[in-house]
Image (cartoon, rainbow, N blue to C red):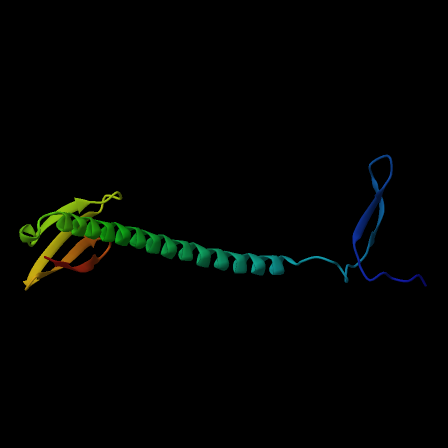
Length: 144
């Protein structure tokens, strides 16, 4: 008796007249490859991973945007402090103004000056709105 292989397949045998003359059925048992279910499960895992990466990208973009706005606010506060240092000591007083950043965000600057003897404490607050009210403050002391 001939030995039966471990795999089966269906094979058609045809002649020159393009008519089928016979066939054989062979069974595939030790096939190398993936089943459709295995491929679909791998695609689901890949899709979930890519969705997680996409949401991480959104969070990173928001954090970078916040960092950019915070840097602009700190620059505006530092600019005002330099302006106040450049004028005469007795002309330094409290006030406020508005600035627009390079990203189009409107910043509101307030500075308060408190004098104690020959020292003036300057507190500069910068406020802005980017999906929530944000603020930062800078405190410095000037001497006469």
